[in-house]
Image 1 (cartoon, protein in one colour):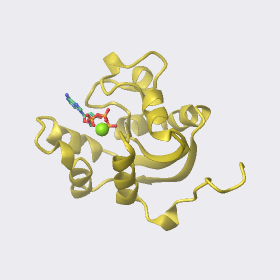
Image 2 (tube, protein in one colour):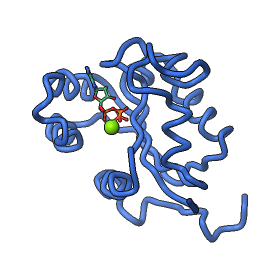
Image 3 (cartoon, protein in one colour):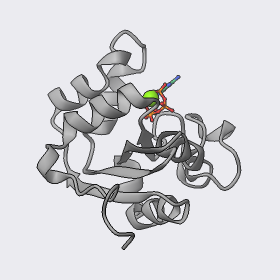
Image 4 (cartoon, rainbow, N blue to C red):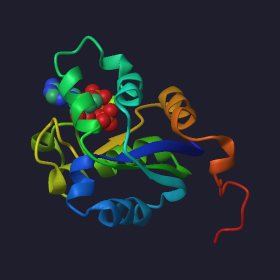
Length: 147
Ligand code: ATP
Ligand code: MG
């Protein structure tokens, strides 16, 4: 699998509930490293474009409105198999189906407000990282000493 980077968003519900640190702590304890991070309040156009793949889905407008309802924390996580590892620690999209001990099982209220977003594959990870970060904003630890 090798070292990968993936995009994580702590969504507005989790930010409102003071869970930024808890979410990042779980991912760090899972072996992932934060190599970029910022808090932003997304504009409607940005949220629409980010979730454009879901444009035809019935929940699209609600999803966009939720994602702009408050600030989010967007991070890049790096590590062995980071994409799958992140999604494993996040748990299933619907918190009712998420495995015990996952972020969504413990902190998400519903499928609409489900605490976190994580890239679902190498192509989306690349696209999503480039959507939110310039190369100058990323501090990769791939070649750095393990600090
Ligand atoms: P994310 O992309 O946020 O990491 P995911 O990959 O687990 O989540 P997707 O299928 O990509 O799930 O859906 C994107 C987001 O749209 C979900 O996180 C959720 O907030 C919302 N969503 C997905 N399916 C539904 C649904 N049936 N009803 C309401 N909202 C939904
Ligand atoms: Mg998705």
